[in-house]
Image 1 (tube, rainbow, N blue to C red):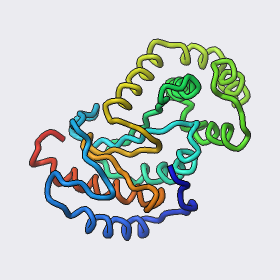
Image 2: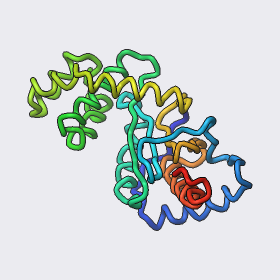
Image 3: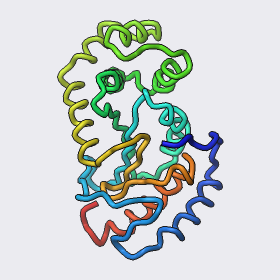
Length: 222
């Protein structure tokens, strides 16, 4: 993947400008793709009936994901009520990234993910901390004031292993080959990062959410 554009603070007005341009670019016949998105084949059914599901495939080990995270976090908070945003940690078969996925679900399971999400990115990419093993992750979360036993139990739990396996299954079903990757409604994947930058990806996602919203009464499935 190419280096992303310099981060900036995207206001809703800036997003609106991106959105208008993107809607014009994506005004194509039904079923046709655009340079900004590709259809997902076969379409995937989400876990949020009646909602438009947006997935972000990512890894804490990915520097692009680290730069994208502040933008997508602010964007998530402004989404409409009919949209559900979920993050899916991927490993691409790497044991180290697989343990980061376990760290993600363990922290989520004990209610510490929101507090420590950005801190994990900073530890890995700024402080060069090794969080790729259970022992290293345990030592780090202890320093963050997390209960050691609760975290250890969550890290090794059946629930965490099940969710990691589910994340891997989704990664294969959505044919994820790079991160960060946004998908919308199980039918569209956002592409074209090199030309649009991270904020541009979110503008494309906005346009696809609107597209999915308009298509929903026709399909009756989302």
